[in-house]
Amino acid sequence: MTFHRLINEGKERLYKAGQGEQAAMLYMVELCQNAHIDLYSQMDEEIPEEIQTDYLEGIHLMEQGEPLSYVLGYECFYGYNFKVNEDVLIPRPETEELVALVLQLFDDHFGDKESVQVFDVATGSGAIGITLNLEEPKMNVIASDISKKALIVAKENNDTLGAHVNFICGNMLDPFIERNLTCDILVCNPPYIPNEEKMEKSVVNYEPHVALFGGEDGLKFYRDVFEKAHQVLNEHAFLAFEMGWNQGQALSKLAREYFPDAKITIHKDMSKKDRMFTIER
Image (cartoon, rainbow, N blue to C red; front, side, top):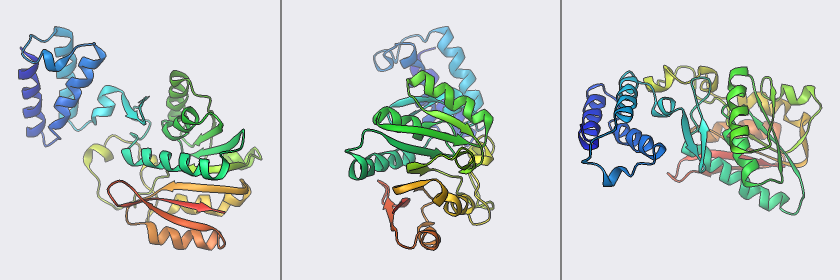
């Protein structure tokens, strides 16, 4: 069996299963990279038995709807490989744009400071907080999550990638308030999908619901943060959030109730959709 034939078999199986057939190629690329095999120069060569076995096992899982990232056990985010499993949400490209926005605002607001306190609220795999710390060591990051299982994954990513993030367990801002901690930057990618919104089966059946759904209107966790934010924010702090593409107007109105004198901005992603918003006090 050659690489080429096996990839075509994988594509056909995923297509028949109603899954994304492009994952068949992506999966083989990752397996070959990990085995230091130049796939494109060996497409018509015999495939090693170990890779064939791993590939077919992965295709079987993806036929059932399991996301490629969970099959691999990691997802690349901002150039770093983050371990992921069913205890954490798979980091999305849109969240990379949130990280880039926070780094830009850091330069604008705190570029001359030696140390800046950052809270990463509802951290999941740790992708946001760890990446911020790796990209800007001046950021002293504390990350929280209500899920102890998620924090186990986040701590492993922190150690593997050589970051220096501290982790605390609790619901949204509560663990920070309990410890009398304050921050200059608060970044949060909360669960923001309305409870009744229809989602792809590969998301609903595999990714943790606690990291997906944000109440009837999707805004529950934003309200939680807005209501308590004044207890943790330093004088010139700013807040940055990811959001659903159609939530900008509702969130701006909600934020204005709690931050009447702040600069509230909706930011578009690379697809020209409203996906981030910031509150600059």
